[in-house]
Amino acid sequence: MLTIGTLHLKNWLIMAPMSGKTNLPFRLIVKKMGAGLVITEMISAVGLSRGQAKTHAYLESHPDERPVAAQLFGSEPDTMALSAQIVAEKGMDIVDINMGCPVKKVVKTGSGAVLMRDPKKVAKIFSTVRQSTPLPLTVKIRAGWSPEEANALEIARIIEDSGADGISIHPRFASQGFSGKADWTLIARIKRALKIPVIGSGDITRPSLALKMRSETNCDGVMIGRAALTNPWIFKQILDIEDKGSFNAPDLDDRYQLIMEHYALLITYFGERRATNIMRGLLLLYTKSLPNRRFLKAFISEIDGREKLISILDKYFGSIREEMAGEG
Image (cartoon, rainbow, N blue to C red; front, side, top):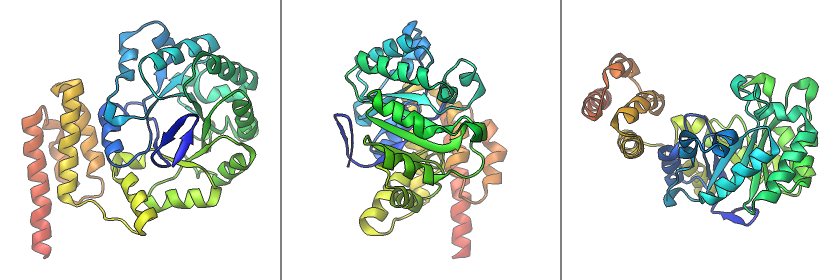
């Protein structure tokens, strides 16, 4: 179990926030797969404070995904504080502040990872937000802006002193993006230095690595990102290894059923047209480890609705079953 502020999670596994990915339907899927906490896509504090309907839609939630954190990005303390109040009013369980995003369109507004270059502003944002809401308050940071500005430990201490209840660290520099290797030793150093929970992130590409990170760094929790896009079962697999020493990989039926369940959820919340557009991309992720993907890629552009999706999916999975039967 992992405790963040007053919130008790059922386990130590967290689904990382990812722009365009961790929408409500996907959060419901990974919560069902065992994630202890899910987090929204990055939400603009400015958009929330101005009452923009599209931005407020990111806060739509469902009881089955609770607890859920809302991740905010912004650079002005008062705006961040107001948006944190809105998050609380919408019934979210945690306010999470993004100080780790290296994407240009985010950092050019003074938000995301570039905030790590201004420790005084970090302190002001956190103290102001802390005073604005009683909800548990967390943050995600990087190793620093660049190797020449490796100040994650300094920022982590400021965040703790400003009243945060937890911190997630992705131990790459913003200048690296997702290249190179995550430095797990930094997670361990920050864990030794702080009293609040420390969540590790980075390079969890298979289930066993989550347990390895926890063992090597003594972190309180592990955040999983891109690996869950191709393998949403990873949360259950990690828990099964922890409990039983092994796990079962999903079979063809499991994959087919997950695709259809996810598609149905997307239709419910976004309508068939948008759901179909989203699902075309997800199909290539959910079938990444399967054979005959050339067949799927050849026809995926033809998918224009539920009927066509099911038809092509049935043909694709049927071809795999025929191949397996021939090998048998």
